[in-house]
Image (cartoon, rainbow, N blue to C red; front, side, top):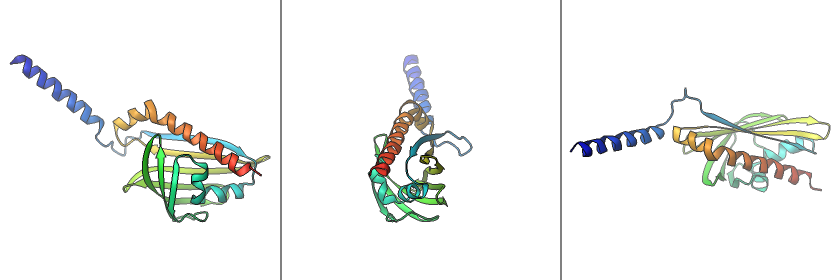
Amino acid sequence: MKTLLRAIVIVACVAAAIGVLFIPLPRAVDLSTRIVSIMPIARESTAVFDYVTTPAHWPAWHPSSLSVTGATDHSLATGEQTTEEFRVAGRRGQVAWTVVERQRPGKWTIDGTIDGRPAGTVSYALTPDAQGTRFERTFTYRSPTLWFAVLNALLLRARIQSESDEAVARLKATLEQP
């Protein structure tokens, strides 16, 4: 009987410990990740800005962008929205992006939501330089649970960084081709 009771207590403790990993973290606990990719592009900053802020172009240069719908055929202004079908680090989904900042040709920021929950922020910073434009893409996302934070640290962050680096390299190749 003592052995059975001990086993039940151990199973209950393990189940509780695992359950804690899936409890949503309070907003005060900031386990955010910033993915930054920088690339020089031999094009004028207004041309780069207009291209990257037009969602119809995203699937051509970003490997995670599968398709876009909604406002897609022009450089989006503050308040405009588009919906993107994505595959990030092997996970497929759909995100609604809203433009929250636009300072042509230097800065553009979008906030994403998935099923009504915050999903991250993407910012583009463009700086003119002697060769054209220094393009910086920053993707910031928050870990909603401890389980996600662990997965992010062990697997996701490196894959997302790699995908983002590939994206800006593809953007450079696309915009610099004759």
